[in-house]
Image 1 (cartoon, rainbow, N blue to C red):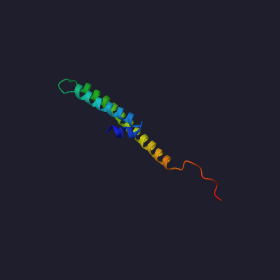
Image 2: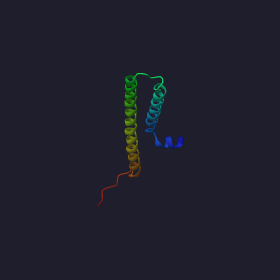
Image 3: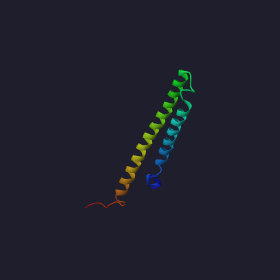
Image 4: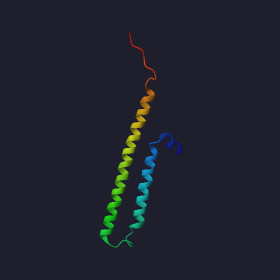
Length: 91
């Protein structure tokens, strides 16, 4: 698995950070919002809304970073396929 991460290059590191952040937010909310610990419904609704906003922002950032990684990969592939020297003028 480490070889896949190394082959993906630098764009994979922000994606990994986004994934860890999203999982941490979900686990934190599961721990904090247990039914027996949270009594007021308004408090729970507000906390869930804030957490969902944070998770949605993280998901959107991960989506855009994935697209950026795809574009960078395509540029590198097509750059490797292009000739490295200019051809002279054709007669």
